[in-house]
Length: 56
Image 1: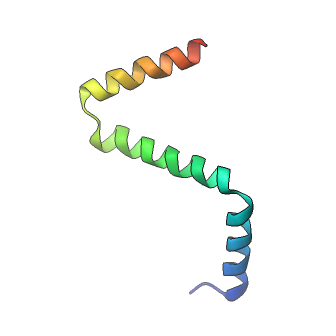
Image 2 (image 1 turned 180 degrees about the vertical axis):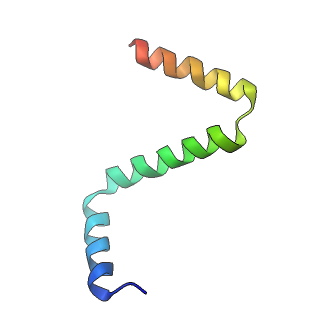
Image 3 (image 1 turned 135 degrees about the vertical axis):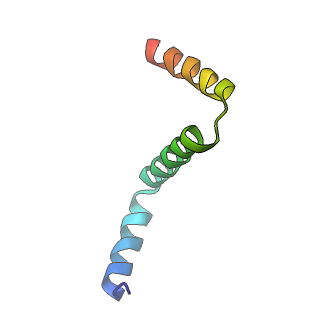
């Protein structure tokens, strides 16, 4: 069980860090997709997209 103080601290952090939360969530989704759901074609497409991004 989480204390009332911890819940309050968590809410305060969450309210101040919406962008960080979104980044963490999207990163988690991307990793899950790559590890568990992506087909070979998906992985090749992502690889190309990543390489383009790194080159720019």
